[in-house]
Length: 169
Image: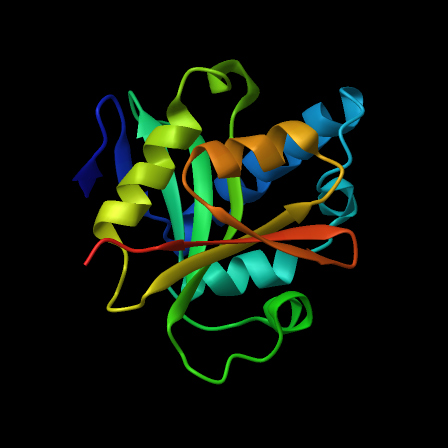
């Protein structure tokens, strides 16, 4: 267990699977309702098995406030098929891959995402040089969020913006 300023970060356990899925689908619905092109595939069960596997492999985290899950993210030391498609097959295994950083809507725009990124940056490098992620290219606000948090834009692949940031050494 680790502390953020106002939150607790823990690895998600297999018992947390339903909570994590429920949170991701709640956020996907909110995004859809707000006409934001991001994660609509989650509403139909897309990635459910990958999410379950990420939890079993101890790559998924939950962020708690007063024992309630308010955010989640997955940070993998290995490329998924999607990562290989977006970034190309990694020849040097020097990156962690961030997926599904999600904050419950009532906690958005309060600095939670920024605080989570900072915590990841300071605590989860695992000896790797970079943290990499992608997001939908036309999600202007999310792209600005990653740039504002020190991520370097690497270009687009398949309408997804690619980013990387050096870990603190």
